[in-house]
Amino acid sequence: MSLEAPDTTETDEVPEPTPDELAALLGDLVIDRDDHLNAPGFVIRPDAVQETLSTLKEQAGYDHLSLVTAQEYENRYESIYHLKKFDDPTQEVSVVVPADKDDPVSESGEAVFRTADWHEREAYDLIGIEYDDHPDLRRILLPETWQGHPLSMDYDKDRPQIATLPEHANPLEDHHHDSESDTMFLNIGPHHPATHGVLHLKTILDGEQVIDVEPDIGYLHRCEEQMAQSGTYRHQIMPYPDRWDYISAGLLNEWAYARAAEDLADIEVPEYAQVIRTMGAEMCRIAAHMLALATFALDVNGDFTATFMYAINDRERVQDLLEDLTGQRLMFNYFRLGGVVWDLPEPRGEFFSKTRDFLDQLPGSVEEYHDLVTANEIFQMRTIDTGILPPEVAKNYGATGPVARGSGVDYDLRRDDPYGYYDELDWDVVTEDGCDNYSRLLVRMREVEESAKIIEQCVDLLEDWPEDERNIQANVPRTLRPDDDTEIYRAVEAAKGELGIYMRADGTDKPARFKIRSPCFSNLQTLPEMANGEYIPDVIAALGSLDIVLGEVDR
Image (cartoon, rainbow, N blue to C red):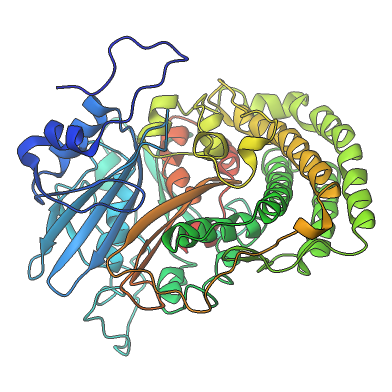
């Protein structure tokens, strides 16, 4: 049985299957139903994960494993596989896998979706669920010597921990050594230059070629999810999102939480506030992409004085606008559930004029970056046809944002799962088919121009908005207590890809489970696919093209 329509053209839409049709497709695999606000949920046996995921992927078209959420209840453990379609992310389904309280073992989904590798390792590390047949089940954020699982109910936070230093040896030698090769183990990081944060790349060389790269993360883990679970929906969670991708995507991060919480609590944001949110989010996107361009040129060309400082200068002009709007330059804390904290700065005309001045000079800057970077012969030699990431591989790893769109994957939540004011504006989703380091940069540079188009339209709307209709916030109760056992997953298109939030309510004013879907976390998994067979300089270029921020990878 297949739920895909047999004869569809590019303009035809595959109808969304009903929950009953999905239940019929899965048959005896389903043992119960557990619907979430965003998607139908199907409870399955812990030994039927691969068969269930494979059926939904191959026969129903759910080809995007967006997130794996793990949590512990009083009587069981539970994994949730959040599935979407790259062609239509509004079609969602949740696969709920309970595991025994005394022996939390569940089948791994890695054989169906490669991205499940890291997600399940994190669930094992922080919650304690073991995934049978997982290819490499070990801790991912905490040291191997760590005692206990920090998000489990019986975790003893006062227990002393000793993180031992491993012996100075090649930990991957057994996997890559034979009589005909001469392998060498090379540590790249954990230091900031060339690794975009405290990232450790365990690299195996055969001669001068890379035959394996293993990203080692967790050095910056701050348990942001647990801190959010300790805060109230209404007041205490919103300051945290700014600190995930702390370098440039504050408002985009805030919107991810706001969208999830507003849908959870059935809050409708005023149209005027949606326009302000959309404008501010695109300013953050430009700031993020300018930093990505600057650091990528530094990685590849070593170009600090020209490209890096030019791009930082344009980024600073955006930061000035965001400071005028929010009062802050980095940790904005400007969004509120139901809208924004205050209206545009006064005098409004001065803010609009300053914004238009920036937009007027931006095309000239972008053209100059093309002259300095994309037209540079050395840069082209370093980036064209290196770091290849085929589109199906990108999808299998759950890659999103410019990383996926640089491989021709036409996926953007602003258009495909509309929120804010995006569906009322004229703009285009940018894709490139090169699948290489060069294409990923081109996507970001072209997206800067699309963001400028969006901002200009928002300014036009805000200038003419009637004064007596400038509602910046909905009427939100002082204390929010969503119904017990209500679950939701919502996402936005952040600068680096799909940034999503899963929350489960327990009837109190704090979430019982708060899970962050980081685009950088999933995108970084693709690095070995891009780096194997390349040379060391190409690894640095590939890593730079991913535009990761370790604060968001580790959370």
